[in-house]
Length: 253
Length: 322
Image (cartoon, rainbow over all chains, first blue to last red; front, side):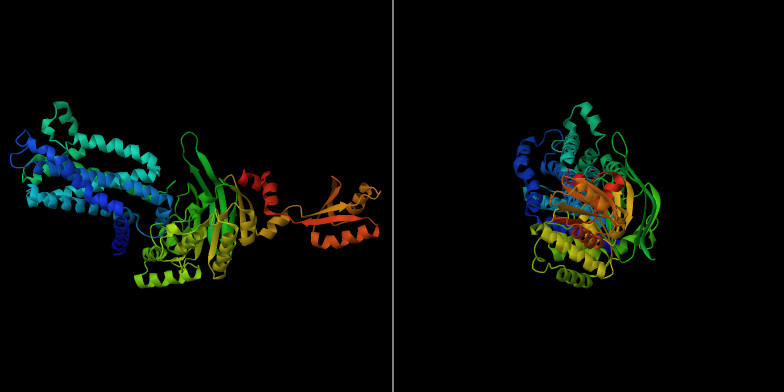
């Protein structure tokens, strides 16, 4: 009981922090729409190419984009944490008798909320342009996105708590997310990739997310990526989350 | 006597690249309930490390400690319920109003919204934050922010309040004001443990002082006791050069029982005496009787710096302002 009320307090605090920040809200809403307006039109002519079904490129493109949103939504979360550490806010919370799990989870849930909001907004806007998801698959995709966000947010928080500097966090975040995203085939299907890249992709957790999201949204529940994404990303999330939690439990600095 | 902090053999070594840094090398501490305990030492002496250990933020490598009656290692949660902690950085969220931040803090300690609001309003009133409480704390002056930080530490009415360098960066006016606040809290029955590298601050505020240097406590006691350990008071006499021998004057005064040592420098006579206030009238009488002309006289009492100097061979002021 106590834990859930603490979790709610920390979650609400982070949610208010986001709602208060116009830049955060603006980026939240417009980042996904940018993909739709600035990149999606290029795909029009790819209809019927290998990897693209004849009845709509958006069904292939949009799952990739929402996975990108989950990776970014998670991996940039640590930057604000650096600022909170500097202000002494995290230390102030750590002296209270509240649960460290609630402190970390409150922040991660806020990040998930943000990504789900972006995903719903993007999907809604894409509907009139030919996006036609399988709705059961869509719901399962939301679950995959939540796991992804939690994974990258935990990682980002864990690094931020250990390094406590945006300057150190930036190159790590950039250096990690770019290859992970490119190898996952988020813009174009990996079926277009040469053999070596296809093999390399199997070591990328986000590859499974993209593949599974595409399969699910198109109603292909029997594809192996659908179970693989949970088999790979759930244990990985557990590992990274515990690692981040340890950083909260242990002292800073 | 009832100790609110009891610590024995605390040690902490930081593992850094290359060589480990021994920040705390075996510290024993006893802090009495209801007192202001000042922890004085130069930057890097290990004060903050001790404070972070005692406030459950840092695990010591060795040693045991009871804070507010609970074992620090086995029962941190009970300790946390009873202590308040104000770090050097403060801890208030600059994007949030004072009232909002205070209510959140109260709720984290299990108060319901109504009780947290009530307590926040009391603290806003007593710490004189009323006219700015509705503004985001990022807009506050240094003194206002400090008072909010302390209010945050007080929301759950702790028995013991930790203050880490509470007046660093404040102007003299705000410093004096904060000192008054700290004394007022003590008078309400709250025990206070504060670190500082300002001697005057430790001297003015503390009921008990521990002086720390290079990971060890080098002296401990009340400000008065500590200062009594050093030579005593110093009287400096400026004499008129009227033909009589300065050496003879020095001899005359040096013979008095209360003078421990007399020396001559640059035409001034320096006397180390046990108790300057009672020695002064007698010195004046003697000079008068010998018709020795006096140009100036000054009395200085030992400072905590003299205590630090005596214990470490270094001056605290040099270190602090170097």
